Length: 98
Image (tube, rainbow, N blue to C red; front, side, top):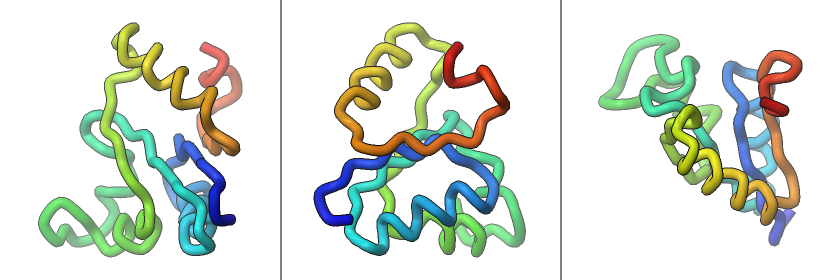
């Protein structure tokens, strides 16, 4: 997957695991998270700012904490989306369109 740019808007287990596999196989994965981090970062015992879950499913990724409710930030993220080869998301239906 070397050379692929992946934007990761996933949370939980399945999506973060899929994008983590892409990162481990050479993709450039950028995880886009809310300012407080995605909820998977809170699962289990904390080790500093991480849990075993967040370490396991986010290794090999770059991460950005952003406020997608801010119109300026949303426009910047849309620019990133246009440059991505893959966009992975795990929102409810209709959320990405909004």
